[in-house]
Image 1 (tube, rainbow, N blue to C red):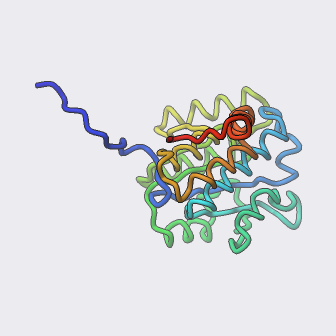
Image 2: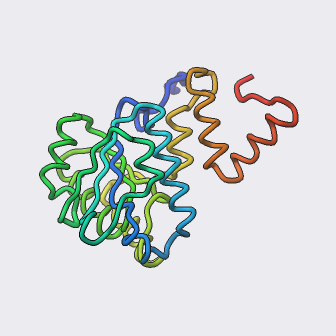
Length: 218
C-alpha cells in the first residue's frame, strides 16, 4: 500500500523544549590554536546559537576548562546571552567525566543533547561518544566547533558521525527551532538574530525588508 503523507515534522527535528545545548570551552587559549575555522566566524556562530537558545528558552549548560589558571574566560558573546547561567569549570578534557556537568545534565533531564565547542577532536568527541554510550541522542553543530587543523576537525566529525552523532550547522539550528514563519511570537527574534549573525542570509533579510517590506510567511 502507498504511504499516506501527513504535514507532521520528523521526530529527529529539534524543537526548543526537547533538548539541552552544551557549549564547551569557548575560551581564548583554546581559540588561539584553532585553525579549522576563522576566529571571527567561530565567535559569530557561537553568538548565533547562544542567542537562538536563549531566545527560544532552550536548557543550556556552559562549561570551561581551567578558566582562571590557563584557558581564560568564555566568549562574551555567549555569557552575555545567559547572564544567569553558572559556568561549570573543569579539569577534565572530557566534559562527560566531570561530575558537576553530568549532574546538571541529569537534573535538566533531556535525553537529546546538542554540543558545540573547542576542540572538536578532544572536547567534543569525548562527551559525545560518552553520551551516546549512555543512551542519549546526540547532535553536534559543526561550524560552532573548531580544531588545530582542518584534518583534526574533519576526522573528529567523521568519527562522531560513524558512531551515530547527527551533524548540523549554526544557521540550521536557529531555523530548525523556528521552523514555521507563521510562528509570529518568535518571528521577529529569529529574523533579528539572522540579520545580525546570519551572514549573507541576514543581509538578504535586511535588503528585502528595507526595499519592499518583505515578510516570510505572507
